[in-house]
Length: 271
Image (cartoon, rainbow, N blue to C red):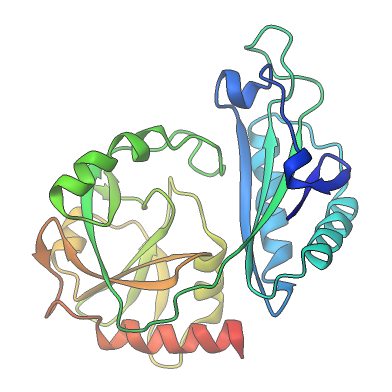
């Protein structure tokens, strides 16, 4: 596969990064991830919005203009010629002179891998709750320390992913946004101190003829009374959650509201 390294498209086998890069020395950097369907990037402008916003928040200079980066992405996607894939745009802290301060020149890497999303409407997962608030929550950074550290605990409890909460307020999963369906059949997602995902944005934008969809400050009590739960991301679209902390949600199967939204969003993406 070919990759983009700063301004050059080269073979992935040729791509290198010096050990003085701040991403290696301190784990400092940001990224974004989008998918292609039929060879075309999905929601590209939204992902670029978030990429440049994350870079600004983390004080990382981006040498490439938005148009230049778009042109490079289109060229890379064409060269790799993958119909359905995942594209990751990574921006590092650059080659730091002292291993602590951000370089005046960041390093940009774009990689592409074969990826076909699971569109099985009957699949569901279980979550484990954990009290934690991500720092720089609105930026998509390389910091996944807590989520990776918790993986052995996750396996021990037989859960598939983590749901963060903070001071009684529901937040997000490490790589996905969180939605619940309340007793009024309102579809609600956490409003603040989260990374506002692109899929989340389009579910709110898409709306539904059948249900109210909105963002709101959600509590652990809202979770206890939820009729249905699902998570969303670029790699998952809408994925039902049927168990949290060992407790079944509803009857332990993907709920009717979630299934309707899954079909509506599938049509929104794939036509």
